[in-house]
Image (cartoon, rainbow, N blue to C red; front, top):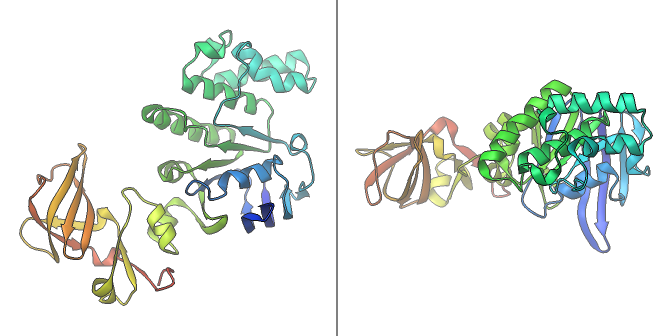
Length: 331
């Protein structure tokens, strides 16, 4: 079991309030991603759940039990850090087994758990190597294996892929997602990368300055952002925002249009523009088009044959325009 409930949880460091007050329910078996810009409080919130930071106020319950004042070791949670935190002089086998050894686990049981974790993580052939003989992705898998053998109620991941290159991050995203499907254990994952959030999460928690802006599935947040912050943070490339007369025609203070919802033509459209940077990526082409209403980013198919300086015409899909009021909230 791994149901986690936060009730009016806040955290301050002296006079500085980091997390004003948060209510959040995480269901057993969910993959929940905390996402937001640097300094938004997402790692602090994870550390509060883990017990690595004390709450200033509020309660944290795990499977109905109040753990607010309990030490980390008693919460039955396993944390995987950005820095791997492996012992360089120990083999992979001994690194994975270390928490079980500290708990006084029987050697036969310990060997069985380590063997099973290594099988799940494709580390069987590396058990007798040391961390220095492994790639970054393999070292991260060892850190995850050390968490798995503890059979926790939930796994807590604090930006575990940020030290890896782009290709390896993509591979590890798939591996962690597959691991969640195998183990069916609650996972809470912190990242500033909204692509990681969109591709991995059952539920995303968008944080800004310690506040929860919106909670929902990736598609919920993509299709129905509740405010300008969420609209601008979720989606890649980022949403285009327009104000003034253009927005007023839609009865809004600001309108938002995702780059993939702008049609491009070389003959006619709502806005005439000049192509600035054109990024040809194969399957996609990203265009930055300068128009009278502002610079519009467009996501088009790879077959679109336009280049820097070309004249084009843009038309937003009227069914996909997001409308926001003067307070920044969706209308």
